[in-house]
Length: 435
Image (tube, rainbow, N blue to C red; front, side, top):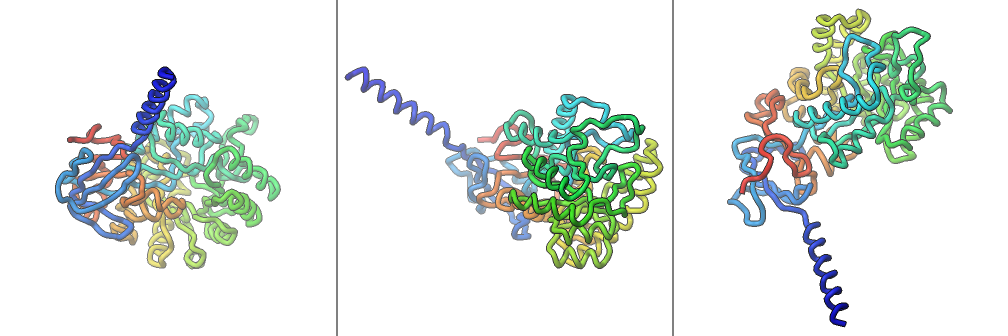
């Protein structure tokens, strides 16, 4: 009886210890200025209470609390972690070599993706929507590795593979006809409506969070034209239907005016690029509530670096034909009230430079607060994650960044992030809170 009682007490003690270990640690951040994109306001001298991964309260600073250490960011401006809705983290960065996707093994590609993920996080982008990779499901593996804590990186929502026509904008093209493309680089190539149903189901079953459709040709894919429609309305509708069955959505890469309208009428949630959008397309997107994700910075990068490094003449020509048109379409869309989320096409230019586009968005019609909202609240709403990310309020993940200066006066200061916190853990800046 004595032994049994002792054993019972010991088990109870272990249970109490386990329960204590599970209690989330409390810590605080003191923000000199806090940009609240949900309210569209800037608050001064705020105390942000963090318990575990999430924010539990935001209040005025009245002195140091007793139940946890305080990180003193009182000389900085604090914002929710930024969100890039159009990245290609898993693949190599764009080069002049059109065969680049064929030059690495899957194992090497994993390390490349991990390096890009870290650079993105260090730049203050704590969430991304990764919109396609040449080798299917490498993005799924990277997302899961980050979630397990194996490598540092942003929260990732991933497409799994491109859904594209044979020889279309989501294919590896421009190589000799007798060179075979590995099957995992053609996982989303669809021949017709029935094939679209089969392939999109396969992509979603294997872990994709949403579908990425290549509705038109691409600037960077040799042999395709941005204004040319590639997927039919019926094929896009099939993908939208399969996504809806699983509670998610499809987004469409669409440069050409007709491709944009076909994709929106077929039910996609967002349009990527939108370079040659016309007034009818803008009105349609506004009426249907579709989002525009326009990469209005990287045309300058492609022109400068592509010319310097000898990228294909076809690519440079297509870039010149779309850059100014895209920016004018973006300006019109902002004025018309189309919903806009921040997306850069990072991977065309180096990862970690994601914030370079923010001043361009101000230059082409947005206020600094609207540009910040496009990379926080709007991006989160597009993903259906507005209760978790893109916000700095009770219940949101403790994904916070801090910068010197005032981003409402000069949004460009967000290119130099001093502190990065994701889920209550500081990844850049001091590595432990100060007591």
